[in-house]
Image (tube, rainbow, N blue to C red; front, side):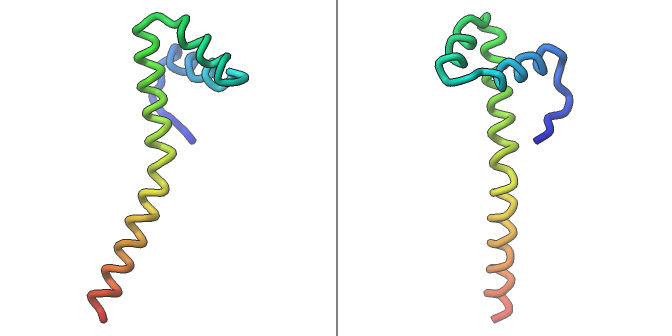
Length: 74
């Protein structure tokens, strides 16, 4: 996965996020962040989620289009 256009601070936040050893460590780190940075982390997590879901959605659309084309030609 590649996320382009990150600021140096956004990159640092993602690095810290990935380096968390477990959910407890992650929660402790997150709770110590200032509110502005918490919002940034939440936004970054949403970008990651979208990047992870996108390939599955593309495959589903491709399959749906194939079914539609087949149905129209029958």
